[in-house]
Length: 180
Image (cartoon, rainbow, N blue to C red; front, top):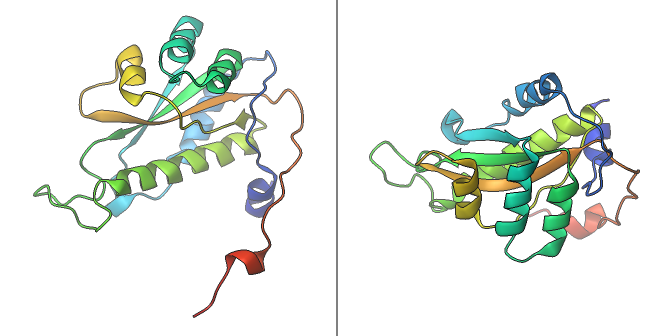
């Protein structure tokens, strides 16, 4: 699949088949995702793959901030990928000052690039994904034993899609683009 087709056909997948994703396939996806650009090539993103159903259930029940839809998605996915970031490197200078007016916000920018790159690489392998944003990052970090100095940026449930998802309408180019 070429890059344009991958971008145009990738959908947020929330229902999955009961079919395992091999560790080799996950490694192949991460091999592509690691090529995502980052602030000054800081490469602060880390991927934690939760396979343990009890841990996934604990995250779903205790860390989704009462958002039942995310709880359901996590409980039905094959694996849960956690995008974590090393704190205070991305967007910072060596002396601890910010290099950008975005401040610490640049960390999430890089996490977003990494998450989307991961999802596109997964899609190319036939694996569905959805990026979740409603969760308690500290609680997720506690459940998975995330090392100090790292923060959970996103949760990405993955699995082989149960069904094809119809594309949602998109705005036209003229509605999105302006020239100055």
